[in-house]
Amino acid sequence: MDAASEIYEPLFQLGPDPREYRRLEVEGVRVEEWGGRRFLVVEPEVLAQLAEEAFSDVQHLFRPAHLQQLRNILSDPEASPADRFVALELLKNAVISAARQFPSCQDTGTAIVIAEKGQQVLVEGDDRAALTEGIHRIWQRDNLRYSQLAPLSFFEEKNTGTNLPAQIHIEAVPGGEYHFLFVAKGGGSANKTFLYQETPRLLDPERFMAWLEEKVAKIGTTACPPYHLAVVVGGLSAEQTLEVVKLASCRRLDGLPTSGSPKGRAFRDPEMEEKILEMTRRLGIGAQFGGKYYCHDVRVVRLPRHGASLPIGIGVSCSADRQIEAKITPEGVFLERLETDPAKYLPDVEVDIGEAVRIDLRRPMDGIRADLSRLQVGTPVLLSGPMVVARDLAHKKIAERIRAGGEMPWYFRDHPIYYAGPARTPEGFASGSFGPTTAARMDPYVPEFQKLGGSLVTLAKGNRSRQVVEACRTYGGFYLATIGGAAARVGRDMIRKVEVLDFPELGMEAVWRIEVEGMPAFVVIDDKGNDFWQKKVRLKVPMGAD
Image 1: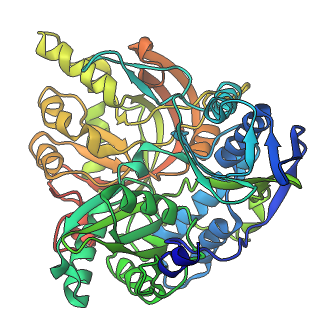
Image 2: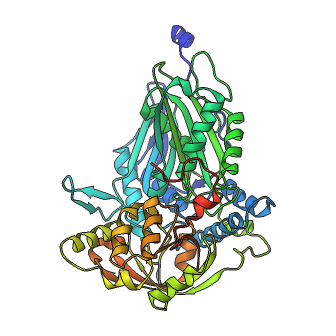
Image 3: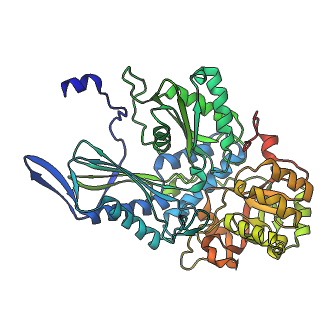
C-alpha cells in the first residue's frame, strides 16, 4: 500500500458535500459486525422507497440555487424583455409544479441512477431491481409520461408503458455509505450532448474559444435555455468524457480542486468558466428569444488524456433542471432538500412581453395566415382557439399514408400544428403538463406537407433548419416558437379542452385537438423567408447548421 500511495492519486477529489438533506422515515437500515468490521445492511425496500421519493421530488421541485438564478434575471437591468418574460414564466411553472399535480415538464424523462456503493454496504437482494421497482411505482402513481421505446425488431418499436427500463450505474467505492444521484433527463436536453474528437492543436486560447463559440451556439434553443452548460476537455476515453459532462451539468463535480497535478487529477477551471459564460452572453441568443441569458452558469472540467487524442464533451441541463442527491448512512436515509415554496422567488410586479398581438385560431387558416403575414419576425403573439397536436410518430404515419396514395388529413390543413405530447392529466383538469417539443425533429416533413396544404402554421420550441425557412417562403407558411420548460403552466392555465383525433394507439404521440386561451409565442419564421434567429443572433455559423 505504501508503494501504491506513491503512484496513486484519486482522479476525482471532491471536497465536503455542501448540500442540505432531509431525513426520510424509512425502516430497513441497520449496522452489523462480522470479523471485526462494521457493515451497513440495507433492505431492498429501502432502495425502492428512496427511488420513489427522489423521482417524485425531482419531477415537481427545483434546487433553491436554480430558482434564485431565474429570479436574478428579473432583477438584471441588462436582461432583455424576452429574458425576463421567460424567467417569469419558468418561475410560475415552478410554483404550479410544486403543488405536485403537474410535473414541471411534460417530458418526464429517462430515469437515471448513478450510485457509489461502499464496499462495506450490503443489500439483501438485487440493487438494480429494487431501484427499478421504486421508479416503476412513481411513474404509475404520478401524472408522468411514458417515453421509453422497446425495439421489437430492428425497425419496429413499442412504448414499454412503464417508462422502463431505467439507466442505472453502481460503482464500488471504499467506505460504509451508499450515495446516489437521481436524474430525470428529457430527450431535448439529452440530444444536446456532444462528443468531439479533436487534436492537441486546439489547445490554444484563441483557437479554442473560437471553436467553442461555434459549437455552443449550434446547441440553439431547442433544449429550453437558460442552460447549465458543461464543457469537459480531455478524458481517458470517450465514455469517460461524456460521463463527466453529465455529472458536471448536474453540479455533481462542483467540489473538484481548481488546479491540476502531475499525477493527472481532474480539476475545474473557474477562469475559463467565466470567459465562456461571458461568451454565451455576447451571442444574443438569450433565454430562448434573444438577450443575455443563454446560460445560467458554466462548468469546465479538465481531465487527463492520451497524448494522441483530445476528446471534448459539451452538454447542458435545461430549464427542467431535474437532479437530486441522496445517501444511506448508519444514521439513516437522506434526500437532498429541494425548494417546496418557489413562490417566494416571484417578483412583486408583473413582467410581460410587450405589445403582444392576439391571434384568433377559430378563424379559417387563410385568415390566420393573413394576420401573421402583417407581423415582423420577433413579434410576440397570444394564441386562442383550436390547435392540432402531433409529433414524431404521427408525422411519420401521415407521411406513410400520403406516400401510399392517401390525402393530407383535413386537420393538418385547417389548424395550426403544435408539436407536443402530454403528460398524464390530473383529476379535475382538462390537460396534464403539455409543453412544446423540439421543432427541428419535424423539419424533414415540412416541405412535403406544406406543398400539400398542411402544416402551414406550426408551433413548437427552438430554432429550425434552412429547409423550413425556404418552405415557408415558397408555400406561405409560418413557424411560431413558444416557451420551452413551462409545461405545467401551459397544461393548467392555458389549455381548455383536449380530445384525440387520430392514431389513438400511439398514446401520448397520438394526434390531439386542443383548445388554448392566451398561449404566448413569438413569430420566428414568416412567409417571406425571414428567420428571427438569423436576424437577431450574431453568429458565424447558423444555429442548427450541419
